[in-house]
Amino acid sequence: MRQRLSSEPDRYRGRRRVPTPPRSRYAVVITSACVGAGVVAFGAASQVPDAKALSPDVLQNLKSANVATDALEDRIADSGRASRGENRDPVTDAAAGADEATADVWLLPLDDYTFTSPYGIRWGKLHAGIDLAAQEGTPYKAVHAGEVTQAGYSGGYGYSITIRNPDGTEVIYAHSRRLLVKKGDQVKAGQVIGEVGNTGASYGTHLHLEVHTDGAPTDPIPYLRDRGVDIKLQVESVYAGLAAAAS
Image 1 (tube, helix red, strand yellow):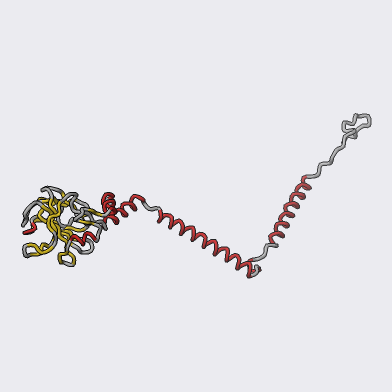
Image 2: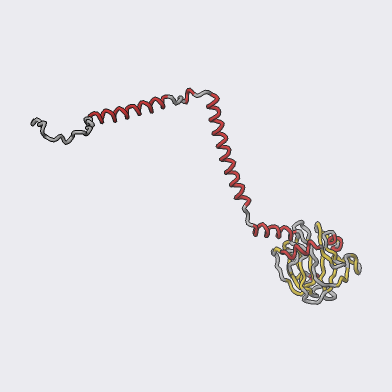
């Protein structure tokens, strides 16, 4: 190596040179830091208590918390099911309510008529119904909901209709000119079922109306009055009229 002469300018004179550590020293420092961090982490982990070392009270509290959580989830699920059950169709509910209301309605069979003959003995025989005179062809209505069990010509009744109500009571409409329902039909109160006529053993155009309970005829006047319909006054209950209008 050439020895620097004292006469050569010293380019490094006045400067401080920091010695550069060898690369092997960097490796030692980094390795030591990593090892140290691992030791610290391992030591921290070793401080976590083992599940077997937990006290019975702590375990019981954890179990209670799990039970409470499960119960809350079940309650939320039940509430959801109840809400879905309560989301009913208002149109369907309204229709069902109207059907239930009209099922109990009793109405007058004619809008306009003249009461001409009561229930009782007439000419030595039982006149088993009442007569309501009206112009021929006048439409008459069912006084109550039920099933048509007979519709056609029936001897002295002429063209007649028999309707059985849900409670077993039967109502007969006789001497019709024309029938608008047939056997097996389901009818509602206020539904037009025929036209007034003069067929069968009849002495004038009128509607003959009979009511049979337990298979025997009964006076239609008090029977219908008990149900809000007054034949003589030609009045039906306000409730009945409103329910029929809504049907």
